[in-house]
Length: 205
Image (cartoon, rainbow, N blue to C red; front, side, top):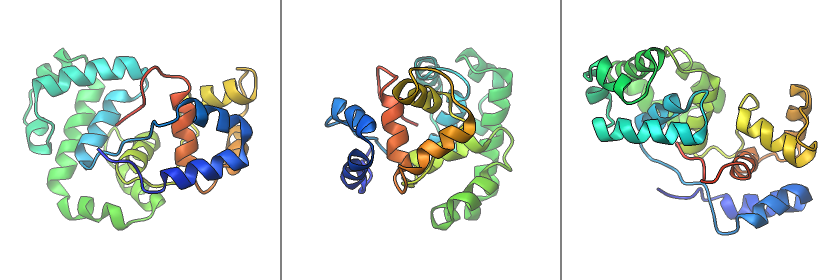
């Protein structure tokens, strides 16, 4: 796994723009987001992580990768009972199979994702059963290393913002979006550090 080329530049930019965020960046000096080059792996891992904690997702994912090699063909051919035994819900098993079949049936479109805009990728991905905007945003962050992704609906991101800027009190979504404006064009990096401020291990997909 590799680190985005823009990481150091982004840290300097964010530290200059936002002193509170700088304190988080300084607290995790030497740590960086790690990219994964396999598109299917990133999306399958994101499905596992939907609506559960990082710790729970890691536990389920470790069972999945112990049970089956992560590839479209092998996941498509894996019986549902095997995936359920790893801790996946019935719904997430359906999502995993839908994702695998999309990769098998749409190889040219999948290969074109790196050359598409963020919103065009999100539009295509959300046509896959079980892939919502959040999962597509995780792909943009952890696979394509897009620098300015801001997944405002992410619970971890919201909690990080509430804790750092509002004494852990909730804020309206509009205020969260407004807070993110100061982090452009590196909202991906700001998001990662806010996640890091909450979790004992770095978030990875």
